[in-house]
Length: 77
Image 1 (cartoon, rainbow, N blue to C red):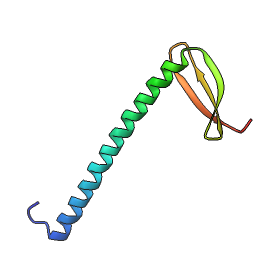
Image 2: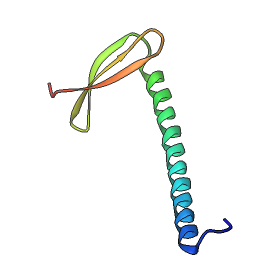
Image 3: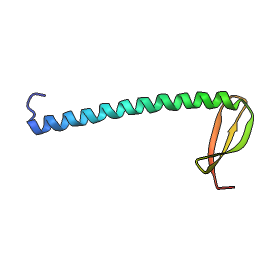
């Protein structure tokens, strides 16, 4: 960081710190999401279609024979 004034170095350090903290949160969220997907696939099985209620909202859940699934918010029944 030669040639940079103190304010610029502080600003860069703060930006790097924010980036690193965000990257950690992103990676944790990504691991959580991957685990949730694996768990849902395991519970669903194949060829399913039904409605679930979570936190007072309704969702149409479908899965195909290849293990792909979709969760779509729907209006209240």
